[in-house]
Image 1 (tube, rainbow, N blue to C red):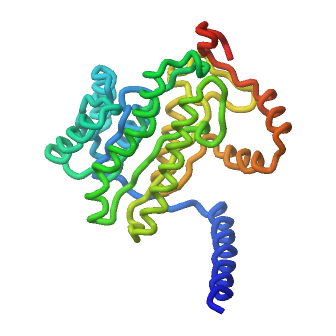
Image 2 (cartoon, helix red, strand yellow; image 1 turned 30 degrees about the vertical axis):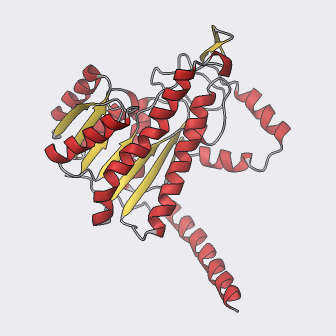
Image 3 (tube, rainbow, N blue to C red; image 1 turned 90 degrees about the vertical axis):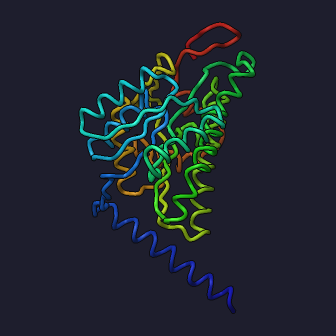
Length: 300
């Protein structure tokens, strides 16, 4: 009898959730304030990280900027200070666990407890699997996913104590679908999406609903990491456009942030298509970028 009741309650919740989602399409979501929040952004020396820092600076957050590139992160910090934000700079290698832990302790002492973290640092080595060096595969996973673990583990205790915070995972559309010649990158981004979903589930199980999570999944972004990217069906995005979508998702506590937003529909449809149809779509998309194939650089 209990299982029947549980299924009835589940059915009611599902119907209510769909109705709630439908209403939210027409009613703008309420945006929270991030003024005064201590925001740590990794990979802040360029690209999405830099422009995300600008967006938080405009909203008067207190910024903690990490990057392995001292010159780049100091340039970002200078612009953030012009926008009126208190900004602290740390040169950190996000592939080094001990360096991450030491830097978090330094941030706690000098700035305070971080309330929002944007795990953005990333790397990519476009090449076929046999042309990809072992150390490049290791570095991809150390930066793109293991760093997320170490940073989150170091920052989570203070968030749990207060049941307050926001953990942002910067992933990619490659965390939902694959592209040839970037196998380590795709694999690491699938792991990042999984990390976000599992962490979200665990926080809910712990009853820590005050700690929010978001995951950013854009298509190709013009960061310079991938040279000459192009595709027929998807736009190549600029970093400032992606950062605006990210900050909007953070302010509205959006769980999964696709850029462009219609990617969500596209991914849903792909689950119902047969393998041959998916292969045909990939040919039509004609995704191209410079990659090392057979130890030679080619457009793929």
